[in-house]
Length: 179
Image 1 (cartoon, helix red, strand yellow):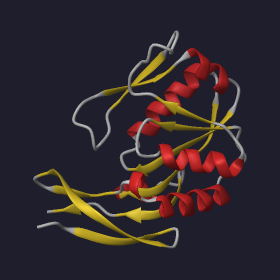
Image 2 (cartoon, rainbow, N blue to C red):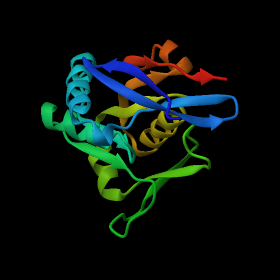
Image 3 (spheres, helix red, strand yellow):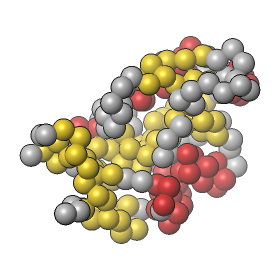
Image 4 (cartoon, one colour):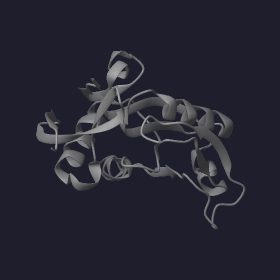
C-alpha cells in the first residue's frame, strides 16, 4: 500500500510518497523532476530570500531544474557539480560525500572550466532538500578549495533537524517518519 503525505510548497499542494530508509525510518520523497509548478514557484520564493550572488552552484541531482529556473529568473549563471568525471572535464577537483539517500560514499567533481567560472565568485548553493547537511559540507569544502565564497545555502525543504539550522534558507519543513 502506497503511503503519502500532503505538503504545500510555495503555495502548491504536493503529495510526497513515503520511502523506507531503514527498519526504523521512512522519508518523504520530494522529486522536482516531475513538478514544474513547484519548481517555478519555489525558485521565485527562494530568490526573494537569498543574498546577492554571482553564480548558482548545485549538485548533480534533483535540484538541477530548480537551479536552472533560479538562473533563468535571476539572469545569473549556474554550474552543476558532477557525480562523475566526463571527457570534457580537464584537471577535475573532487570531494567525497555521503548522503542520507545514497547507500555509499559518492564523489563530487568540478572540471577546470567550471572552477574558473566559480573562482573568486559569490556562490549560492541550491539543493532540493537539506537533511544531514553532508552534501552542503562537501560543497563548501570544494568551493573553499577553488577559491570561491559560499554566500548562502538554500533548498526547497529542510528535513528533520536541518529545519532547526540558522545557516540555511528553506521554504518548508519536511518531517522524518520514525517507526
